[in-house]
Amino acid sequence: MSKDKILILSSGDILVEEGVISIESKLLEMLENTENDLYILMYTVSSKPNNFWMKLEELLQKKIKIFFVLESSLEHNDKVMEILDKLKRYDNFHLYFYYGDYPLHAKLIVSDGKRAILGSANISGGGLNQNHEIAVYIEGGKAWILKKLAKRLIRMLSNENNSSNL
Image (cartoon, rainbow, N blue to C red; front, side, top):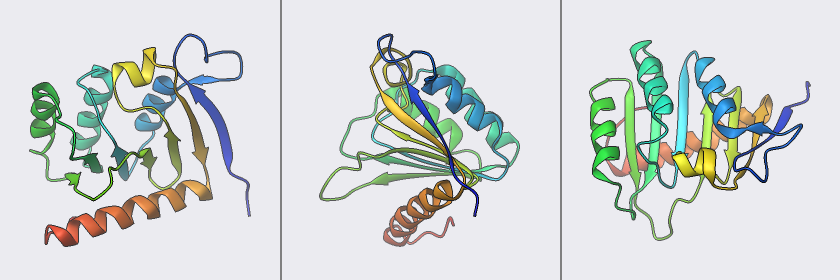
């Protein structure tokens, strides 16, 4: 059994140093290499960074399935809702809002079950650039386990909504 590859990622001027990779740059690289499906579990998002949203639309145009889960208790701003509405026009974009007794505070992105980023950063200008966030990039079997967790949550949300997007 091969070992997982793990890299340390961060954002913010204090935490980025030699041997630590920018969360945003690794995220964009990971999206670029996505071939089949992408799972995103996020507490909140913002309309920035623009390059993230443009990359998601490119993936959708390539017919890659995207499963996106957001916490429902937050009021997502109009610009974010506009972006999500635009992406919902694609049949391969599946958006879910998590309604639970306790918030979904996860920040997880899994590409093809092969690569994942797990950490403290939301998808926002602050989370990916200004805030001092830490994450790990995982390549290998542990990424597959994270995909299974994401699919479990989405399956639960799909059952609650009587839809079958998986």
